[in-house]
Image 1 (cartoon, one colour):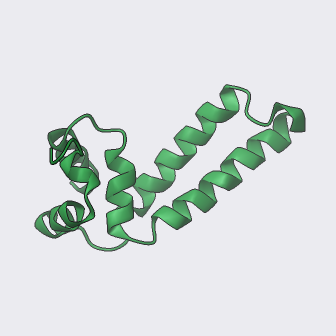
Image 2: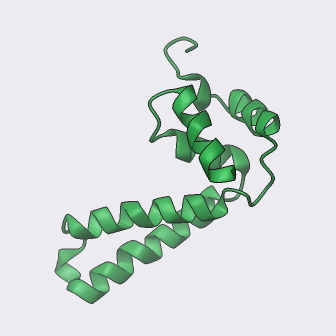
Length: 102
């Protein structure tokens, strides 16, 4: 941690991690897409957009997930920051990345 900010939240550290692990552009696209859709499913199951009805609510959260994944997948650094958000430590992030890239 630097000044209370976890290392993986600092763009230079994320860039260095991507280089160290040899993460190629596009290598994490599917993991990000899956994670955004997992979040969308949770939101739907918790009543997001209930005013729209089941089918429309489902479509809305998953369409939003596609858009969010597309934005995140614009850079490896953004992908790492997004995936790191669910990790408790840099080691947990490294373990996740090793699993995803292995």
